[in-house]
Image (cartoon, rainbow, N blue to C red):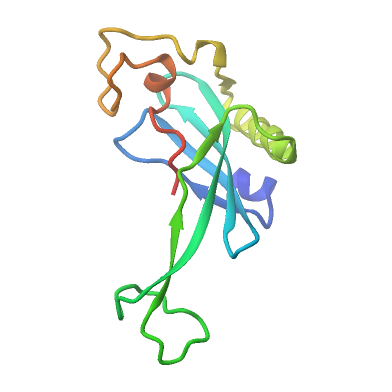
Length: 165
């Protein structure tokens, strides 16, 4: 995380590790940009490093944040700005995150820099995506929620890489 702060000054950086629910530690860079209609597009350039093998994977998620208001007075901690005396609150509703293992061109530079940091600091190698879907029948993965056998990607990283804080 320290290296990321130096490599990406001024960027939003977060820790996406979910203790006890995956076999990896995660970090991400994030940015948001306004969309017409008041929505915001959230883009996260994420890295997951396996705790079981010296492999990492870098991927991108996108998600649309939809602003809404609720009429529940004093139900949420953040009042709408500029509305003195208004008891409704500004909330965000989120679309489902979309995961991409092949990053779009507009974030390729950040992906390359993030991969370089992982390789330099940790000495890990990129996980070959060709093996991601290899099924592991008979293997129990404690955090796995799927119905089919877990895959190598599930076992070494997570069955839910798209969901980040």
